Length: 112
Length: 116
Image (tube, rainbow over all chains, first blue to last red):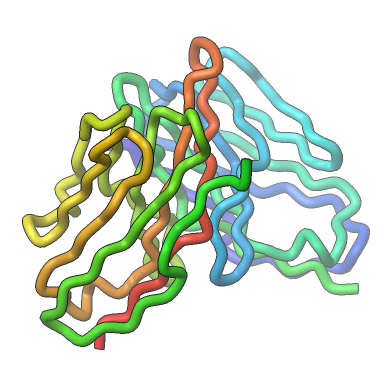
């Protein structure tokens, strides 16, 4: 059974810092891995999707990497801003299924 | 295209009542998913449709839960005889296959249910 874990559970940093959020999964047979952002009381916004054949994806100040063999993905946020404050969720999609298995998220606060 | 929409955004009900939620996916997205999210947790898969066919159901979806997508467009999720443990955010997502392996799920704002 696929299990997805995110570390740390919460993170509070001053504006301008570069951040690394970690995601690990127990079954390396994934189809893709997706990172989402969730603001309090809101739905999820897709940030980056990495196919199983890819090693990383970049969008603006965000970079996500994928290492299937070690069961890890990282989300790198450069030059953090207060507007980045949110919960960040990773989700793995397994082969032969179309559902996403989510981690419990990292709650990020960036203060001015 | 205004994205995935869900109605209502909030619902308060008494234990034992039935509730129904609606999800309108992004137009032309043939896949529609339902997830449930409790406080401090990530979303958990409930069920999904490809067009009007319900292809997978989680064991979380007890016999009090039923989902439909009659015309392959909008979907409804009904909970009968609600229990306090049903209190959660119910999220809907839609997607389409862009190419081999490319499928981004786009989420709606969710319906927050509180069962008293």
